Figure 1: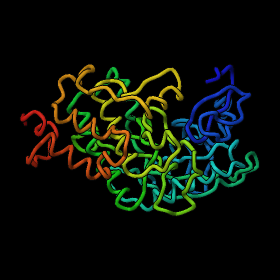
Figure 2: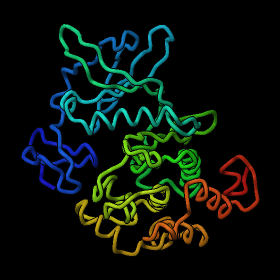
Figure 3: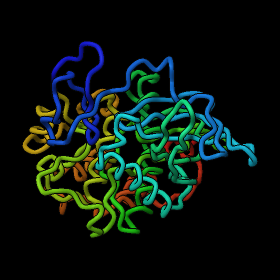
Figure 4: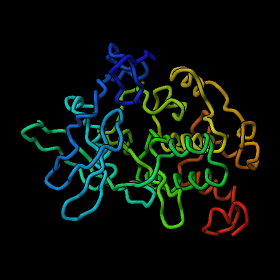
Length: 345
């Protein structure tokens, strides 16, 4: 990867950063876009968007969009406002992706999926030309799984890891039942929020790279590599079709990482990791860090779902979740994750 000196460019598909001279991502061929410059003079903070969303502050900046905390006037509730970067307004793939995220999100209803409330376009004002598509999502007051891993020193421990993985299986199981494949599951796309006594209630985000059934509007060109290198299934790393089994592979990778503190495949570059995804055998979960304390059945289930051939994995996230639950809890039906894993109330 070319080192960045000052403002660079970023692939709108995989999020990889490059120097300012790289116009196409060498990994997947997608056009790169200039990264936003100085955020001090943010064009949206303080604006009233679509006549009802008062933008209060910036929450984060991604490859495609800025995400803001906004207040919905009239309903007096906080929402998250995801607005496409102005620099990408003329990029058809970027605008299609944010609209796809809204359309697919609007079809999904599940407690562990972030709710999409609205799709719109920013209005023009005297000091801003407007036109950027935006999505309104439920506001989630918590932290990403990526931040939780960092705060925990890289690993969550067995109890939390299984708890998080089961909820991801539930969420993507709902998507798979509707013919929707996420295709970009990673720690940044999983939020942990508080619900009642549960501090690790999962919300899965960002269906911008999702595939919905055989709809040609959601198809990709043969040979396109979509996803993030450390979590992409071997078939995706080779530019092949990614079905529900590809999401299962990503969930198994996340579970491996949450328990051990690292993903199955690491490397100095995305290309090096992709080569391993295709050709290297994954390490045994019980050979690394806290994974040494994992039950043998769990290690075997994770290994099964890191198989190179998608036909050797669980058919979808719902099946994986059922197998994980049976592996860890047997026939016990307690609702408390701690009770089920430790036997203690």
